[in-house]
Length: 151
Image 1: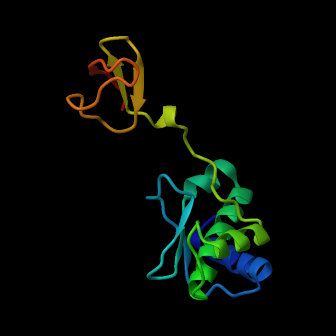
Image 2 (image 1 turned 135 degrees about the vertical axis):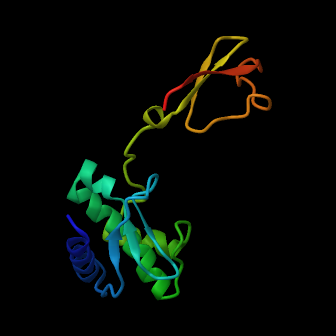
């Protein structure tokens, strides 16, 4: 799927599920890593993570579009568009928009570093590097050292 088809899909979902037109741009952003999509408050555009479509297909893509359109339409109408707002919860339930999308990679697949405790031998996987002078083992408060750098 390309950006033109994504734009048409977004417009059709907006018309059919919300009864309102989508007058801005929807496009794939390959730089998105941890989110399925996002609504941009300044430009009113919607960015979609292409990896979600590649891994989970069109049904997941439609769910993400519905979720972002909830933000879009509520923000345009000057209603509560944030996740915690009652307006957002009500609209997303009405149109069947999920609260979260499925993770592309789980934590273990994303982990780049493995730390080992010198006291009890427990290992800890981390995505980001940690300061071993400040951080200690959560079980025994022992000193940690970098056991393995994966990526």
